[in-house]
Image (tube, rainbow, N blue to C red; front, side, top):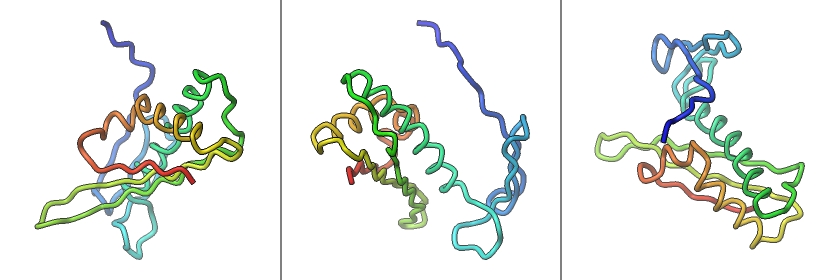
Length: 136
């Protein structure tokens, strides 16, 4: 099967966690700082959380459509990405806290589980980091 590329995000980053990153189309131009730093700027964990939560909502829309239900207009995902260290080795773990107002808990769980199987971010981390999917 041939893979069709739908979009390529391109960034140029300098200075690592204390640097800056800019997208090739200049729509993203941010300062970076380490978590807990007093410097202004965001960090890679926040960027992953933002991208993943946005993508996950799109995947839930597809899942809801397959189940012949409408995704609530006030659907939200609060993503938490932890930077961890154990015995000198760094890793990530994450929680996606999902709000689907108006959907019963069983249906909300079905939508979230299906989205977690199809979301490209979820696929990218599957088997690599611990991920909790919580329905609020």
